[in-house]
Length: 380
Image (cartoon, rainbow, N blue to C red):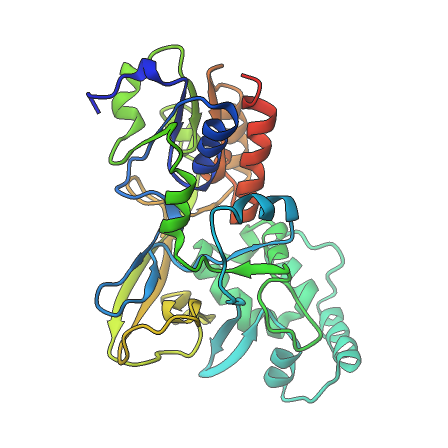
């Protein structure tokens, strides 16, 4: 790092994840300015990072399954210049009491769970009756919201236990809007996303980020922590910081709540372990929330026969040194966040998933990065 001359750069991007990489590419390509990207980890791509397992040849996602999906054509027109998607369509299954169901809940899930053979219209009437039994007209928390959508039996089977594991608290302590991310269908559509564009990069996420950061005006330095070098940074640098906002201000108002996951990766001497990319485990008695099997993300590839790579996911609170995944964002977090947002220095822009303290899908992150460049950096 000592060999870098900071005066050669006008912009410093902290973090080589999706938000930072898109912003750096726009600065380099559109403005023609030199930009320095620093990343405290040993890889680009943030939590989208992927790699080829040397034993099986399977493309593995380092931080759990990441499927790109969008219905925003402007965002797609931009990012498709840096990647080509395969034909993977995301479908998730859920295991409950040794039976496997479609997730999100659809007509197949309803009929299998209740032992019925309902058509869509009859299922709609049936579910309306199940929902009415709870008598919830104004849901005040996640549990009440979920029951108002799918009724209590399906909630208890597929949502309650999984949520307790995912968030580490009773669902009644969580805001209602969390559950709105999960679709509910009265047909046999088993796709997880409704977006018309979805898939996994054919050459892997590593190649996507290499392409985004390949411009001659971009310099990337890995294993470089912003807080180790900030005292050496000249005042003229315009900084785009994509790390946790509370860390940037040295936790002066306290730490924001995050959830993270421990990932237990194993190579299994089987051709196919579970028959799908993601299997959820909804019962509290099972300590993990889901198992990823990465070979299924690339149906167009033929990795080494006889072995597969799986990854069990164990949610937990994020402590110092952990990689934060999901913002808790309770009432106390909201108060702390407002204080931090009012204090960032004039030459610093804070954004991205960690900086904004929001859970963002990949397409939303790209959209926000493009908007941020157009509105805050293009004319600087």
